[in-house]
Image (tube, rainbow, N blue to C red; front, side, top):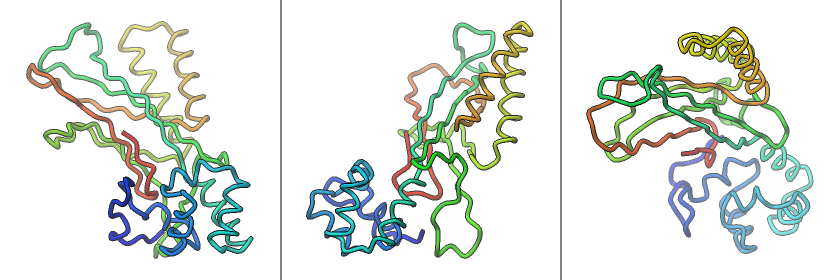
Length: 229
């Protein structure tokens, strides 16, 4: 993927501009204009089309060949959709006071059209081997303070299973859970990892009394338009 920064200029209510389209093979600014005439103005609208309608659009309107259209479909099936389920807890505490250690638990789940979990991104102009990574941030968008920043990778399932199992076991033990409860929680975590989720944990100290509007961001370093918050 090699998309110029100028392509990310917001257009027509689309905050990412035409940049998401240009990460597809064989796409150019002229092709983006052609599909826009058929009311496909955002990348999500292109992804939401049925395969049949999209093939018709790409071949008959955009002028791509059957092979080029197949290349586009392969990359679209590789582009992930991300969801984040996050909770913050203070171990052994019902309330929250300044200075308490708060633990963030976030399950980041990835889904692709081709069913894969780990995959290499489409990056034909990148000079080196490019892995797909995500960054999970817990931040205050008002003050721009980042409270937690963690890298998330979906490539190494074995390492993810080991890490999630250890984290869940230690957490349950600290809460006085029984062996049976710990075993059940670990099994559940392992299944989540195998099904495309990764556990991200982080700790921070509770700040002074007040209202804080924290936001969780999941940012992709390989795809445009996949970020979640």
